[in-house]
Image (cartoon, rainbow, N blue to C red):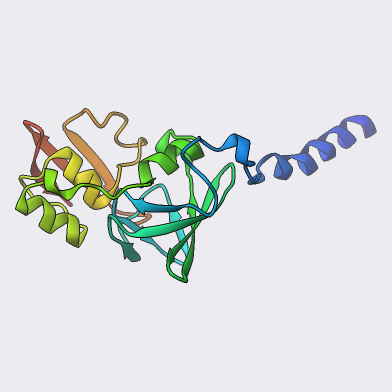
Length: 187
């Protein structure tokens, strides 16, 4: 009895350590990613209490696409960025079961060294990308640029014709596509 109790106690004490957010060293980062580097947002993002969860809730303070950020630190589960110069520190928290992405993959979806070329979008799409909203007639690339990627828990394949986004922790909305364009939005 005593041995099994000690074993259980040992496991319980070790579990929190396994979930730690270990800082990635420079050799673990992709060749095009460097701490202290300047990047630009590739999608519209919202954060609350200085945290952007990759679940991609559509509430809080909006960071528009093409906003300049500085990469402060990348851990195994989080990315610390600074928005503005000097600016607000934001923690990007990768929720892997909602994205299916490693922290490096999440970084690549959210940030790049260059701005998104908005010339590729129609006037309607640019208007909604600027406001961080979705409208009938927008293409899939314009939707992800405007509001980010839908969580894989309800949208396992973005090649499909229905994407479900979380408005907040409790409410979702669906963006339906026909012929690659938004056909309707259902709250």
